[in-house]
Image 1 (cartoon, one colour):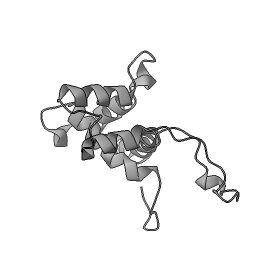
Image 2 (image 1 turned 90 degrees about the vertical axis):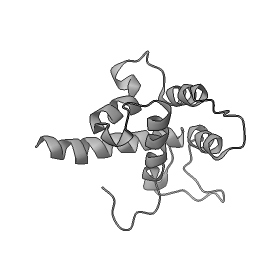
Image 3 (image 1 turned 120 degrees about the horizontal axis):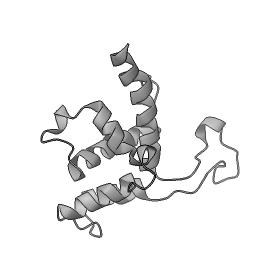
Image 4 (image 1 turned 180 degrees about the horizontal axis):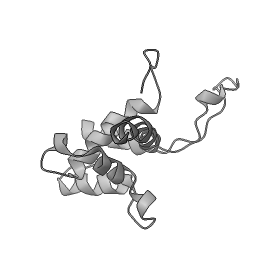
Length: 132
């Protein structure tokens, strides 16, 4: 799924996103036994039901139910806010040079970008391989 030259991109935020999901909204008693299909469904709740809460809302609710104060300066709070902070679209560097199309950022959250990467990677590399 990754090449040896990959050093940045949404996959960097996939593991912390999945970890937060498994911690905040446990899908099973033991996270290492959760099927990939269940993780995919939990990461993309609105693909199946447009009225479902967003992933960010699900994780936020789960963390507060576990008595985490998301307004403090803890590492968990900082990670959650870092992943869920909206970042505007970007096509140019701060000095005005246009970025390559591969480096354009469409806008959104790092958590959202990670979910898109996970959905593509799991669907095309993991799930397809296991069903073939």
